[in-house]
Length: 442
Ligand code: DOR
Image 1 (cartoon, rainbow, N blue to C red):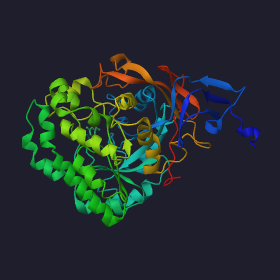
Image 2: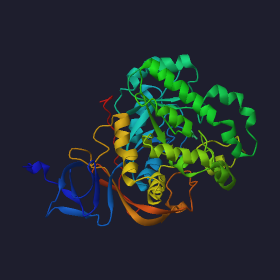
Image 3: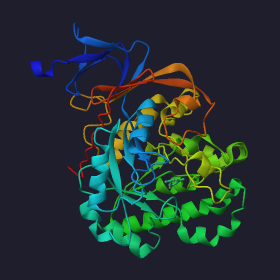
Image 4: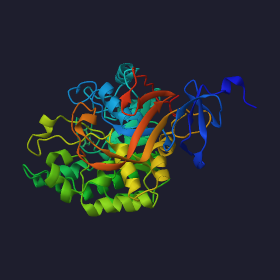
């Protein structure tokens, strides 16, 4: 028997609900921002989801929202608005802002800026440096932190930990899973002369697959020595996934929609520097290899690496053009289209965007539709068709590498802790994002 305080205030009714037990035709009862019961609730106010799929809220564990310091590209409000318009209920935000997020004060500053100004729930990574290595054990335990992020190769900003000795110091400080940008700085420095001015197609020649493989192999070795779990971000080569598949006790990894969708042969001629990111978009053979390993069950999460730069910045001549592209709003529409084309099942996508993220990072109260969990839902129409148009995009950068793309699958609603952040393209009146909670930082 349920108590009256467990009686739902409202229910998501008549949809297909994707529970840990699989898809069920059942209603979801919500009270005070939490899921109280799955069942049937006659007489309770309904949000009708006939014909729709109700997914656990999509969590994007890699975005760059640029605040503080780079607000001309994006800020926490605009980036999170793009997130909820694309069906994302929570994000982990990256530390290469200006200043970098590398002290307790800077984490506190981001959390203050985010509170009820961000449209979705959020956590912030702390950037590892040679200077803060010994403080990371403390910093990673601050509530609202997603954990430590290491840039092994230079990318946007100046966060960098390239040498084995410093990497070891970072990995020995703390216990939570460390997120890694794995590109080998030394090899990339040696190969800088391979960049061809004006030709972004030379980007993956410079930052070649060996640069990625070398860094991944090094960090796997160092992580094992330090007995520290790691998470390799935006993996771009099948060989890295093959190696990661042999180290599942210490390593998880992420794929991005960009690397699963774009291929060098078409992307650089068609959209030039808009396809430039780190690690690079590689060949169609690489892309197919990522799909192979995804289908083998090796990749754990899909993250967007939303990394906006303005059109003006992207118009600079390669290699002066910055690397990165927006993606938080298009993550789910693109991946639903891949599902519609039979490249992965909806259940596998759901795992990689919710329960998988929960498992990898130890999130609390998120990632599944189950009693007691937060009432975070992403509601989609898998049969609907959708075109990515410029006027739909909310990122301050104002462009997407996927503008004009026709997709199957449409995001209908984004519900964050029981409140509609977006429904049928309409935003709520107010943002009410709150910090995420993690088992390692409560
Ligand atoms: O392409 C990228 N852009 N890769 C990164 O690692 C950083 C990001 C950015 O912040 O612009």
